[in-house]
Image (cartoon, rainbow, N blue to C red; front, top):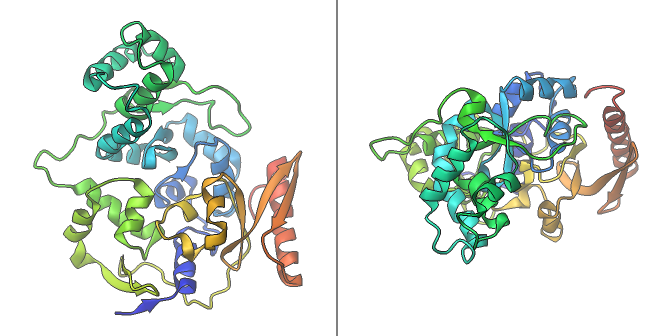
Length: 358
């Protein structure tokens, strides 16, 4: 079985994540290809798409949000993701059990004795009038009936797990500020969520495995689960096994992949790229060593924005006013310093509104 070293995996990841070359594809297609973008920080997807697409302008994403072609909702790992409307409706039911368990992992004591199905029905009834509500609004509406858990536990369980909701614009629009307002996902998108397969099969899990490999492969089953947080995925991968090819990494782990997916030569040059906070190019793996050193792994969960140099995390970046400030994690060569400065200047112009991505 062919062994792929960390550099080969790095270049495959960059290619799949549209970070090796900026892609000339519509924004909606990019969001779909990437299986969504991590979006609990509302402005971060704009930088994520700027780093990946030619001539990206913020209005392109704004139009998709207001036009209900993409949506902000709790999904993978119980985090807010920006995904296409089609994927939100197709994937949400498959995430139900995981979302409940993750919220219970935080609030099990507070929610002890609460019938979650009854709570879900009450939450849907409150939202049935079509009035967008915040998590706090929902918790207050139901607090008289369930006073013991407290508003935080009630609200988190309702909007992050029990009632599939969309976070409405202006939340998530370019330079917009506003509290989170929720409506049922089916009401906002005009179609019911796809139900689970009646025969107990897992077509959604199989589709997720294929989509994940297209955007993140080659990868181990543990990487797939780390990306989405779902159980039962080994069975989904087994079901499509004949479609896949296999490799091993330097640690001996088996990696699977789509046969025709790009796996560039390990020597392929990688441009400087600025990534937003919590970018899935890093968080989408159990083994993140293909793109970030173990010594810096904590940056990926601390919300630090990072700079890729030669395909690896080599610096962090912040914005002060309209200026991008880079803090290296290692010494840069003169060529690297120039490349980082040039890309940082391009990003600064984008954030000022002077131009889109190159």
